[in-house]
Image (tube, rainbow, N blue to C red):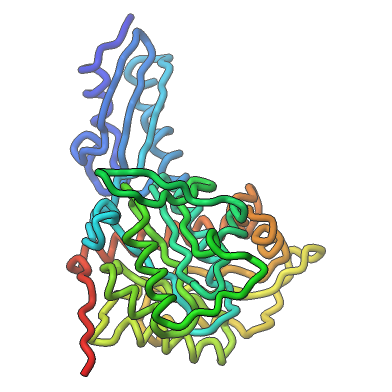
Length: 366
């Protein structure tokens, strides 16, 4: 017996939505059904297409259709529903939905490593992701994404020339490192650095993105102020190690975003180098920089704690060879990075549900 679309749609009303106690039909997540004899193609669009959600949906759909029609061949395509916040910046960024600044009060805490893996993790969740290497004086993304020798192409759009970001591992990347000799230091005054940052917003064609991550330089300064004045930042993620000297600077980083004149929501804190695990003793944890320092800071400041990433050799090696550690399948640290990406995604959803869209910051000087 061949199936028909109406029968399949009726059966799918029994499949619960991951978003709540309604069916995938009622929630609007069921986008399309195609029936070819006893073969069924189903298209879904869900808010958070994480692996556990995908697996449960696939299992529920297969179970419901088997109970209704017996042995049916089912193909299920699950896409990410774009998170709509809709910031307005330069025309090149009109289709960028969420701009996330990744910051640290102190250098050397692994902020760029976190940013690179977070970008890949969000792309793996099904989102369209871009990354601006805004650490003007120490650009590292070309190395971390194995695109050191790449150069952005130029394309004419609507009669104007734009640079096109370089794509690697499903992430669109733009960095000042593409235009500088990696063996030479970038020695610029603040005005030159901020001009370069503005060009990476206004002269680069980003097209449609769910997330644009910004890897900021450490501390607080000209680049940070230029950022919040140039584009409306959806939220900030602050990275720190658990040691006291780093926590003091992380607190300052949080305070900068919370200034009345800036007012960018801090969506969470990340604890990097949370413990050391040697390869030969994978079950052991050595708390070299202290234990749970960032977790404690998040409780003090009432800011979400997004997760802990250990200090392990494979993370450093992955960055050095240009293949983010999240891509190392079936490793504990890859799983932690995936959890971090899911946590950030969830906090952005919470932020966009409860707060008004961000506006560009107007800072005046006397």
